[in-house]
Image (cartoon, one colour):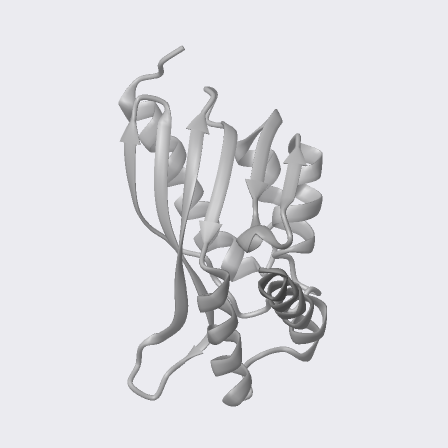
Length: 174
């Protein structure tokens, strides 16, 4: 089924606005209920070394917007603004940033790019999402944040170092 362009655009604009609100609240899990169908499939391959597939809203809440983004996991001060999107029928490609805390001395953000391939499923909610970002750039960003004292120790120990080890192990297999 194809939905009107305006309806699809309202949904992605709503998600953009929700990301701004979630960053202010330091709470992300609520986005799963607001923007994803109960049976939505959400995939993030994390560079092919730590693939996460969430089957349904409950798993999305526990993984992508819970464990991976909510406060307590070291992501305090981070935001993930959606900066642009393109729509073709019910399909959306969104361009977003992973933006770390603070700013560089020149005023620019500590950030790296990502894209999502999203399918709109009606009722203001999405039925599918596939996220991609360059894990190597992300690891370099973490190193930069660590060097200036902006990387939370919990994020470094629970996410950065395990990801770095998995990437290096995968590269050594080649």
